[in-house]
Length: 83
Image 1 (cartoon, one colour):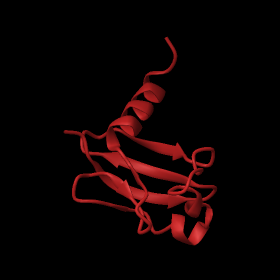
Image 2: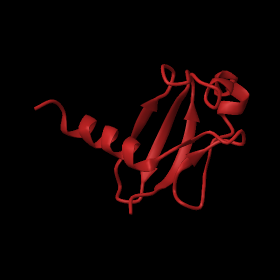
Image 3: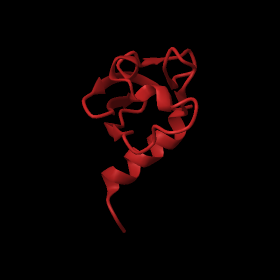
Image 4: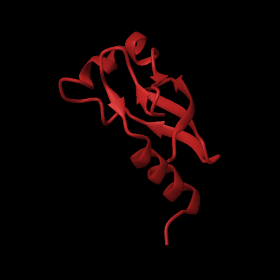
């Protein structure tokens, strides 16, 4: 199972992410911070409190989380480039 092993908040609601298989990159979440769980993350201080839970998912103190599988797929596609 792929897990996030490192996450670092960057400016403009982006994250630098490293996965257990070595895939790494930056994810821009600026267009994804909507809805009752993710809107509070528009507060840069709360956004910067990002951590990794025991399952290797990215999470925040307000209960927002991101499944590692989808992020891994997104970064993997970016590394390969368009077909």
